[in-house]
Amino acid sequence: MRFAELYASLGRNKRLGNTLLDDSNPGGQDWEVRRYEALCELVPEGTTWEKDDLWEGGEKKSGLTKKHLEVLGWAWSPVQERSLP
Image 1 (cartoon, rainbow, N blue to C red):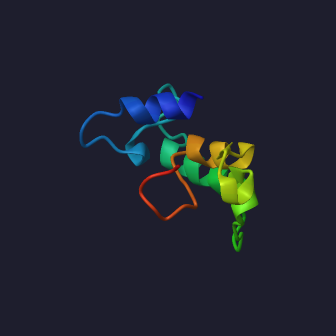
Image 2 (cartoon, one colour):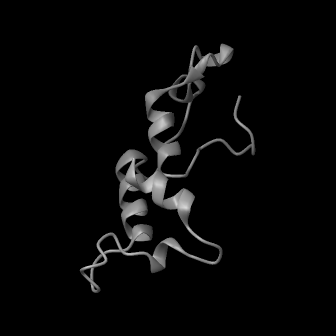
């Protein structure tokens, strides 16, 4: 995913809001706006998460669901804890 590569390579003090999707279009969209658009599509306002939405196997947490991986790919997780199983 292009976003994940960019996000991981951002230098110190570099922000998504200061990084354009297309450097040849100075008035174009930045990565912060694109990230929020993607997350709004994936997680509409008012979304609530159940264990089965996040982990395959629910309580057993055998692996992340496709939906959870998608939101993680945009550097966000509905899980409040700092570590995932």
